[in-house]
Amino acid sequence: MNPRALHPTLGPAVDRRTLLGVLIAGAAATRSHAATDNVLNEAAVLRDPDIPAAGNPEGDITIVEYFDYQCPYCRKIEPELQQVAQDDGKVRLVFKSWPILGPASVHAARLVLACRYQDKYMAAHDALIAVNSRLTEKVTRDTLARAGIDVDRAIRDLDSHGSDIDAVLARNKDQAEAFGFRGTPSFIVGKFRVPGILTMAQFERAIADARAAAAARKK
Image (tube, rainbow, N blue to C red):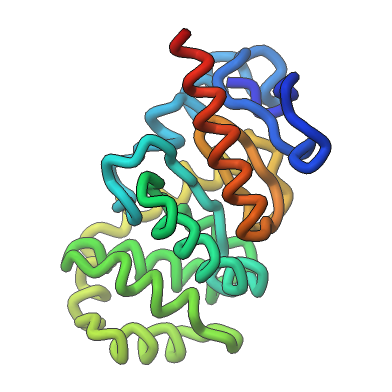
């Protein structure tokens, strides 16, 4: 997959968007073709089995967000992104932690991923992304507790499954860097690469374009 190949049919309103799955060559100057193919294959990007999906699990379009729990833009856009998915009804959401804002972000990302072992990943995610203050380990744990998470269990699960959780975060980081993303939030919409924050209208346009591209490929 070439994260930089421009899609020829995009209009000026979405000219930052690029297409997944076109070419392997040139995807990242420092990577071999095989390494890039492994990092950016469609299944790994859109359907990582270790990251629970939100929205419609059978949706025809997947939106992947690379985010940091301390990123103010990620916090701001979250309600709008989930509203767009709800209004559309056929969008599958995947939230990929890319903790680039320090140790507190890493701790938050790891602990939220540990919550999936008690089937509380989305509850934990929604609680932490709504925090409007700087995170500390205490703030993270207190926030999760208020959201009904068994924090003691999450910590035990983190101890037991830490290597698996760290592998998820490493995959997320490798993908974000291979796509050339420079910060959070950054998105994959269908097979389009979209760096930076979008409005609700821009999300809707990106979803429509992704559907049109998918339909065109089937002809």
